[in-house]
Amino acid sequence: QVQLIESGGELVQAGASLRLSCATSGRTFSRTAMGWFRQAPGKEREFVARVSWTTGRPYYADSVKGRFTISRDDAKNTVYLQMNSLKPEDTAVYYCAAAGGSVTTNSYDYSYWGQGTQVTVSS
Picture 1 (tube, helix red, strand yellow):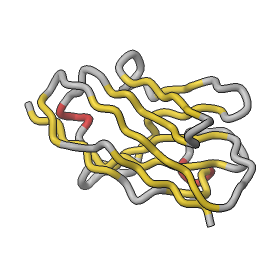
Picture 2 (cartoon, one colour; picture 1 turned 60 degrees about the vertical axis):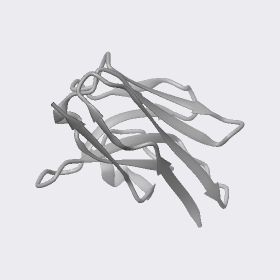
Picture 3 (cartoon, rainbow, N blue to C red; picture 1 turned 45 degrees about the vertical axis):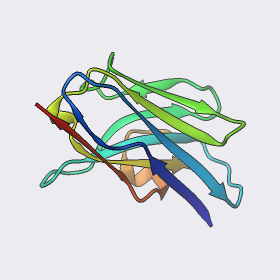
């Protein structure tokens, strides 16, 4: 079983920064990408960022480009999402996910998911 555990979400004011972490444990699997998604109340889950596990290349949703940075620490088996200049519209539950096949922005291509961490940005 592959386990993903997110942490770092909290209540902050607009303009603040947060760093989310996603620690991976359990059985080894050949991942091709790690991604971050988010889901706000009453909305569909949406792609935020991903990093290719083979090339290390990141990719971002337009809504977070220039403000969020995804990174990885292979020694710690952890992926991070640095979020700067947070806006109220960034409020959501943030999920970490791992893909073992196609590297896309589609949630259904990600096989393993964490439980989510709440990020709330007040205006």
